[in-house]
Length: 342
Image (cartoon, rainbow, N blue to C red; front, side):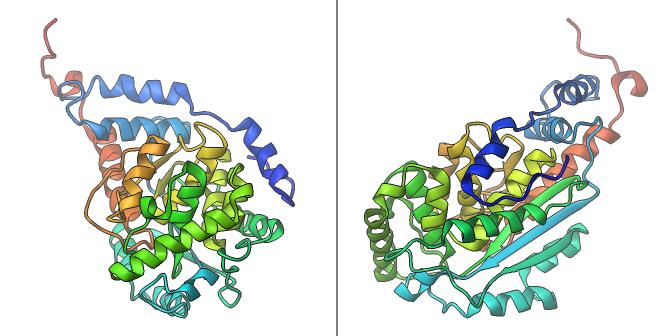
């Protein structure tokens, strides 16, 4: 992939999306053809067979691989946190980033177990986005800057990219994004996030409704929705997903906030997330509805709602299992096993 010209506006992003590369049909077909010769009944490995074909199609090679895997975790602060929409104060974002750096978070343990490189990106934590109930969360310039930062984080030669986030109040931002992109009220999309009580949940829903009413005129364009209701870390994820598509790097998304950020691209252009799979369905109730909107079915359902990329890392195990089976199994001819009779 040649490096695109510097992005300065949403129009520049839209121009990039006009010529999104597609999957490599030859690599997909080769994977499916080889799969039909392996020592198992046709379709017996279920979604594992789909995953190996998906990986090959976007890597453009057969057989597919999952050796060089990168996890990018983007962290940002949200001005709307001052509205009491989270059980934790905003300073926890920076504290958790330090926990990542020290290796003390859940995601650190999963990365170590999976032998995955983890990179943490702090998105101007000392400059929270504006409270989106009274102003756009970001200017277009700020949003494009964060988007570009996310694009630059992607290793173009990675076999697979996993994405995650950290940011107090970002489930409020994610729910607002979903409402702005796909309609509905705050109550249709909110969940308990970091563990707020019923009163906090009602306040969270009302906060989103206030923002939707305030920004109503801007809700017609997905990128305007992102800048009015999103966060720097979410814009960075959106950029990373687009960069991966341009480089034909398959992507594993994490939970609700990560999927909401990626959904901006799907709302802008159908099929923009074909190179992505969603690692797990979050316990955040809005996530299941969001998956329906973007036509995705999560790989895992573990009742998790942590973020950090944890669901993506756990789903990586399934992708690697799919690829290992595809690469390592014997064919019927190699094993001397009779095939199914016609």
